Image (cartoon, rainbow, N blue to C red; front, side, top):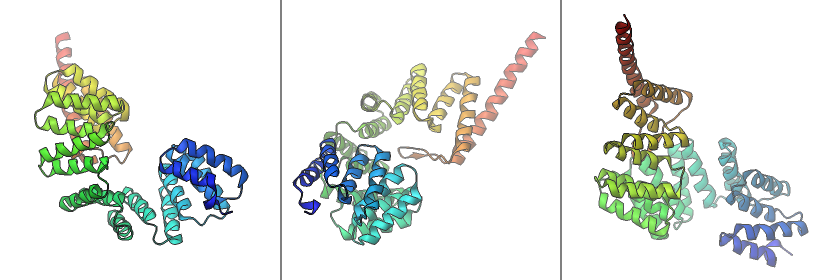
Amino acid sequence: MEISKNHDFQIALELIDASKYKEALDILINLSKKEINCPEIYTKLAFIKWKLSDLSQALIYCEKAISLGSNNPETFKNKGNILWFLGKKEEALACFDTAIDINIKYEIAYNNKGSLLADLGKKEEALICFNKAIDLNPNFDFAFYNKGNLLAYLGKKEEALICFNKAIDINPQYADAFNNKGILLKDLGKKEEAIICYNKAIDINPNSSIAYCNKAYLLSLSNKDEEAIVCFNKAIEINPDDSYSYSGKGVILRNQGKNEEALDCFNKAIDINHCPLSYTYAALLLKKIKKFEESLQYFLKIEKIVHDADFTPQFYNLTYSNLDFIKESLENIFELNQILRVDENIILHLED
């Protein structure tokens, strides 16, 4: 009997479609003990382990399926996803290409290849892949969403908006598409429409810390600080590792003159991901309250982080390049060193 006609295999597929991965996993593991040479079982096991974030075991299942002669493009698509998340991007790209070689009409492989190419900085090649995925499946909401993100990055905001709208037309419950449409509308100066999009994203997914964070940021730009803090707090409640919400909340508290509370927020953000922007906020606040030595140490830390890595962090629509961070840090390091030397000279003079 072909495995596709196996009753247990069919039940496992239905469970996977319903995102009931652990139940499907148990069925497929038992089935693999009976059908020991079936690559399709291992392909599905790899997918489940990928969804459950067990990447090492997922990769083992992929290799098992391939060793059994799998010629299923899904096997190589799964392996590509896993390798990408393991940081092996060139190997992942080769897997997506293999999936496409097996089935030139496999739109998912084109979409995933496009996402990886975008991650590798190959934006134009990525756009070609997204367009190919859409040509193959005009109702592919993920491909429209990814194309929209890429077009927004390239500054083609009106075209990006069309893509987000198309993704939402296809899937009205696409919370991330509403969120990113909100970001784009905010950039286009359409703040009220942006808030509507963030609210829609939250209605669809009440646990979207990103939507709450973006809504809070926009509220703060509209001088609705108390509402913004409520949203930042909600984002942090949902995701205690949301460094952006800590930084955004810190900015509001700083502007309200609550320096100690603000500094606490910046330091929490720093503890989470060592983002140079959070260090900058903290350093400037310490400089403002005349804690010059501590401020200097923060700026020195920024300089080291940016020099040690190719770091181009983004805080919503505010992007700092490495050069911007280095320039600002060096200027402040020079200024603070001058201040500290003056203070030291005063102390020496007094001792005389």
